[in-house]
Length: 116
Image (spheres, rainbow, N blue to C red):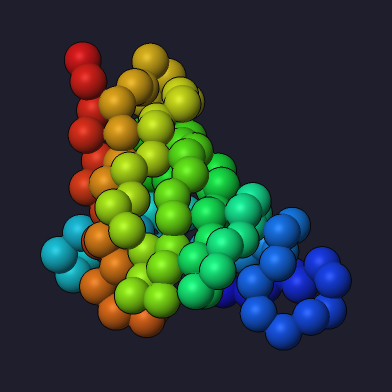
């Protein structure tokens, strides 16, 4: 993960970006990788801010693209549900949503809900 602080101030500010990438793991098997860019779109008192994110999951059968917005508070991110916006290969007609749960500081569990 890397971050871009657009105004050089400490703490979150509008326009800051977070860039995340890594492996997609199912059980103990690496099944693909992902990339995501999140832009901070709103700040509020008490260390609250909103992130607008867009990214893709790359799997052997193709890619699934997603985007959405969620709020982060001092307690951490709230409920994270991101819309599936499309895909390639076997996922070219993909729609549905991805639910994300932050397991710890470095791991996130993703549940992909595809609608047929």
